[in-house]
Length: 107
Image (cartoon, rainbow, N blue to C red; front, side):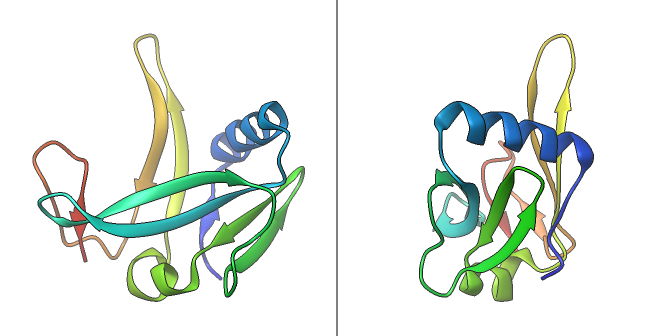
């Protein structure tokens, strides 16, 4: 599985997992929005059936296998923070378009 988390993303996920008292982060996509797909991130204790699993220092990353095959292959997840905002940034080589508000994307 070639989903990559930057050092900043790993640090933030580790903080979230520790605070929630769970084991890992699950990534998936679902049909939504005007462009077709929306990212899902959930803090969970175990993978769903057929999830791909990658271990990091302090947590596990679970990626929905169907989402991986259609939209998440090669994803690079970053976490950025400045004086006014913070959030995860999805650098997805599969993305062909996005809606104007940035909530959904197409592959």
